[in-house]
Image 1 (spheres, helix red, strand yellow):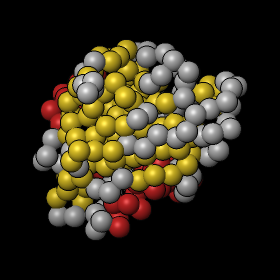
Image 2 (cartoon, helix red, strand yellow):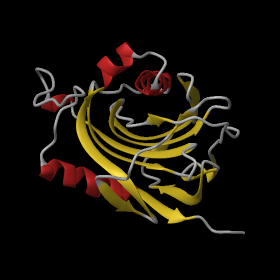
Image 3 (cartoon, one colour):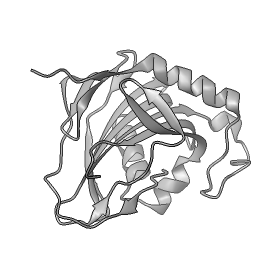
Length: 212
């Protein structure tokens, strides 16, 4: 999925790992100023942890709703930390801006061919997520409608927080994606983007982290 990242040189700290007091309340050392509270109507799956190329270490948390074994919607929380020794840095503005909880994120929406992305990059997020869903007896769609929030979580550019809200869109694309952008993703109309945004707000609350 879209990442919008730029390289910068410097030594790095240790990777962060997300943790939760319960499966639906997620905190991460990568994002120490916020906690993520997910609607219990979504089923929490085991966390995924994997490297992204030779740049970052990711923890990806999946929360799903399914019907007859097919994933209907999914919330993804992803926390990334630059790998020790890498000169990679997260550097992007929160534009177009969208406030969510205590922070402002870069906001985007699009239609996404998940199966094609997974086949193209079998070590990256789409493929790993599809494998995880299938391992839990679930069938992911080929196409998703997506809203995405992303922000750099520290001044040094070592950490990133990303939120995805996705809904099964297979029925909308019997002949493949239409009106695609330069990244190969489909453009969504404004009313669909707003509907997805409201759906995200119903299943996720982001709160300022409390100091002990």
